[in-house]
Length: 391
Ligand code: PMP
Picture 1 (cartoon, rainbow, N blue to C red):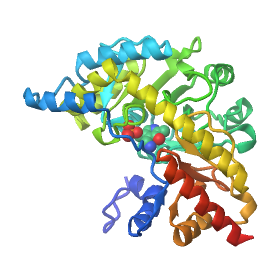
Picture 2: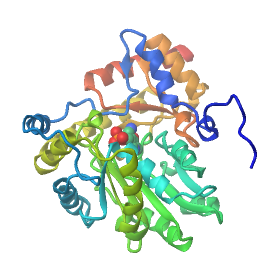
Picture 3: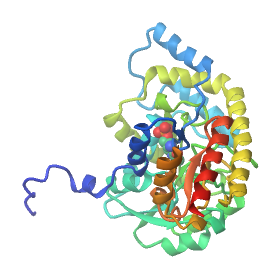
Picture 4: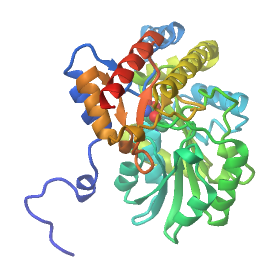
């Protein structure tokens, strides 16, 4: 054994990862006035009132103690019913579902439950910024596979095949995607599933935007024959129910994997917040109309926003889901960092440079349309003015 290096206090693993590229940018934006923010990845709606009321009632009734580690059984039953009804996914509430502290915790425990030191995990990019760092923190090696605008940011089977090595343990995918908004249909996922089976891999499928699809229903890779046994689905309440601040998510998987995840969850979180769990029961029982209204509103904004980008000369593929547009800025000659910084300083519109989402992201900016139509219109006017100063 080599003795430890004196004077270095933080771990090698932590030193390997970088702070989030999104946060860095927003510290600058938050110090400025008159900003239109297209930067944050969260709904602009407030959680529906009946859901907030259920939380208040939980407190009034004195539910202030821990729940079962895996979450209240009543909530897991509701989650199970919801998954069956919305996505035809049958999961046993007793041993295939864990309620987590946001989808964020679900991603963390999923990776820590399956990754051994040196295992490779293929991360399909551009994607949510936490995947690669979480793989590293779990002791694994993230292997990035970049999708392209030409393929509508979908994973192509040959790309996956080319990235697999004897060390590959799993792939991480997320459709509808953050930041591109792209979706993959059943047939496209089936082609991926064939390779996953051939190489005996696992899939971590982050389906947190599953409710937000605008041109057809969401397809889950777990629905493909043979895939249920290989898939860990990550989801939660943050996006569909406008509950980001509640920190409530869930993870579903075959029971050998949920038992492994539960051990980590037990020692690190104990359980998710009790009053948030009561609120989530109400959300699933009576909140689906509210979800439908919010989704309609996002669709209307998407239609306006994507068309506007094309009109001002920033080509934008049509995002089929989530609430992000990911237009190309290649014809401006700027990098995504330069574009985002100059746009913020001159026109006070905050967007996120595409490169922070990994391979395939450079040359694009992420603009969230989870903000009012008035804000979107003003943002388009300002972006148009900014581009014209570059000509
Ligand atoms: N996955 C994706 C794809 C996301 O975009 C986000 C939030 N931006 C999360 C997970 C984290 O969600 P939560 O608030 O439930 O932790």
